[in-house]
Image (cartoon, rainbow, N blue to C red; front, side):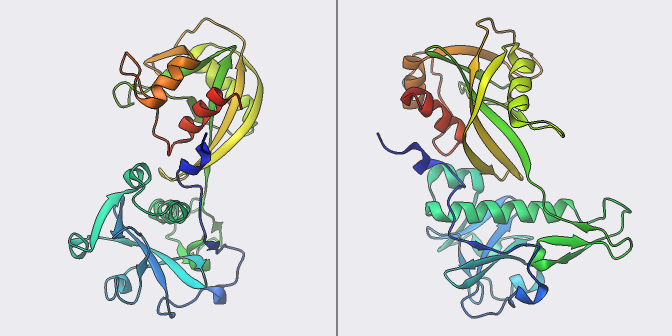
Length: 299
């Protein structure tokens, strides 16, 4: 069987990352030779053919000059910047187009090793769009460290990009696993249960709490399986496997529209799109798909 991790979105990147710990002089100028860029218009990425990497000196010449770039790092020695553009009339004709990040991952519209870079770019641009003011005193902040830090000129506070941890878990009981359906899900889709990690909480405790809150099923034996950056806008999905202790399910309607125990044959049919009820799994780019595949493989 092929490696299920090969299809997991946003996990692969060749980017040599910049960080807030590097000095200001480490940020190259945007007109550096061979400079590359990722450009987003609202939530849509500008693509040129089958790549999201644009040449800053040609593809974005004149347009990117008016926007504040974020320096992401280097790719094969070339500096890479991220830009948020106000509109995209120049990018709606061949060889350009714009596409939302979820569709890019689902369709495989760019090489897999560009997906991690796109996740970084989108998360960083979203963070700057939502954190223009100091959380301590309310003063407008300034971008520093190439965009990996914001500083307040009034109170001196430093603000750094945030990643929100989310636990997502495949709960199994014997030869069955627990899958749920949120009210906002696409018609017919069932997935692993998930929820945000709360302050002062371990991963194991978050898994147990979320599963119990949503289904009243108690769990034990929580263990880590895999993780996935999820840039909507800036989460990290922490994939876990857990053992279910209860058979009875009592769903919280505020959390789930439905939850069921599925046997291996049903899960296989969901993954292959041939379940008799029309039930289907999340796409291969999602970590829930990877966890369901691990359940089938006995991993």
